[in-house]
View 1 (cartoon, helix red, strand yellow):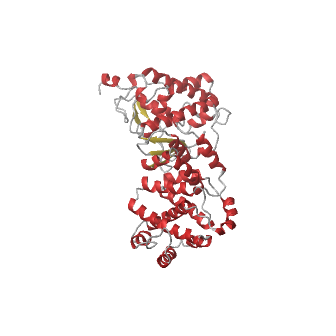
View 2: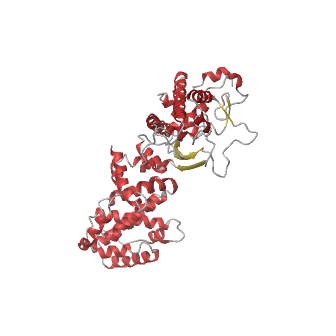
View 3: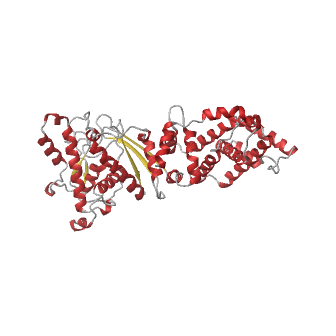
Length: 475
């Protein structure tokens, strides 16, 4: 590519490297540009100078354990053994450290540039760079250094500076850092801009942010999704990495676009927003608040989200009291299987039909005992099948209002119990969701429910961390 053509290109280019992209957005926002492509040459220079000043300031602290040592500590996970945090700095005076850091962050003179193109964008490379400047981490099994005889990655000045800006676009912990990446440019712009603003505050204070439940890696991603205002057009990658000499790591978890958009939309639509606190309660355990369980399932096992909701609603069957949150949580679960899991709509309709008839039969019985009898079959498919077959006969002998014909048809039996139906177990979970939803819609309140009402109130206390998270979303 000719020098003239290179000069016509924007000061900063987004490449296919996720961490370069995060850094490029961070570099743009340090210069208050609306996007990397619109960053002017003057703004680029100002942003680079800002980063250099921050690096010098951190280097002069010298001690990562000092009151203002957080930015210095964070740098070791990005630029180990650099002039910014080199062990020898403890013995150097301020002027020597300042000159060394500025030399490290200075653009190489054109006469020293190699005859090579940038491996990321194709511009003229200004040098070859390795671990000191670019996170190369893969795992503890991979020695995170450039191989002997290999000079490193050929990088142009804008791409190299993107890596220098990378820490500004990450959630910093003092150890492994958390970056969010997506091919949705609006999501990248808004997420990274918020992070840059927050990190500039931490640099000014010289201290880490508070260690709350929001610092959990999956929760960082979930919160960013739920705060995003526009429709997501791509999935989201959660990248947790460290370039530190004492244990380089790289972990990438990915969330597909349908689930990411469903989580974002669940805070926008009123009916789904009402069901979200119940979804957190469904994921809450003695060891973790629900927001952590939901965030982890979203990245690791999305199918478990609907299962958690079904188990929570099944607990209401056990206590024979249908909670006020049942209908909203059920709607949230069915929206998940429709929009994210892409379940066949005819199968969903069949399951809902069985749920409506079972609920009609239980409502007619008006008995907590009968409800608990149904609940006792949930963990045993053979027992549930027998229960449904028996109720089928009962409903034919003594018709119940709302049950026209058999309680369950042959096709519905196959959908729920046929061993050849791979998702039969999941269909039974959805049956529970449908039954509880229908009982709530019918205002089910058996005469003998009083004896378990006190237990219900005692068991449904929300986790304090979940309460704090929900209040944060409202503010």
